[in-house]
Image (cartoon, rainbow, N blue to C red):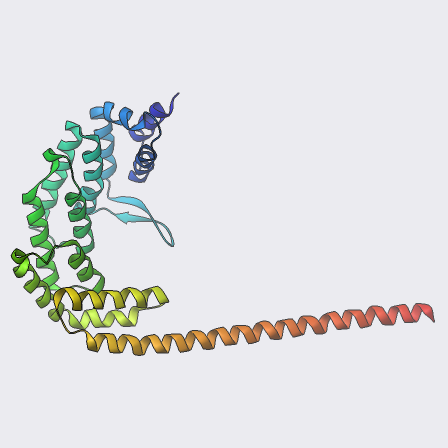
Length: 277
């Protein structure tokens, strides 16, 4: 059986969407014939992908392991759009449009996850295939993101929205005003993120987010930056003390090990002396 045939069988028999993602990544690496075989698979491939995304959860690889994560309408849409854009088949177009409709309808009954919404918007903005492009859905996504940001947002959520939107155009003045208001409304939550920093990357990421808010939104983040630097100084002092303590413990173990070796040598030395006597 050839690689393309294997790829089709793996997609059709996929239990989890992560299996389909692995096959698709192989096709993107240029393995000959794989993408063409998936395109030629037509409705059966689209049906397999539809089944995988219709499940309640999916396996996702994160830095600290693989986890079962619940699908949302936004993550389903974001996962399918790049495949539809690359494959350019009617079946995949229909699937993507169906998921887009489901996503849009769901906003009447639930709040959007900002991170998932930004993921869906980014997927839509990267579309190059004209039949798949949807200015209306893009506009709705932006509206929902701004609406949710006004309710409540954390630093990472607001920074994701600021990063995905073009706020430099004159026509974006209204969006800019909304995000400034969102920052002020969620200032307590945004500042409380400082207490969640556990490692160097956390501090650097939050510092970058605050600086982004200052440069893009024009808001004053000096209180947040000042407190961040205070907490960071405490963190570095603690880490230095911890490093010194670990070094002292290591030296103590080395000294104890040296004493043990000396004791063993003395014991064998005394044994040799006894034999000589």
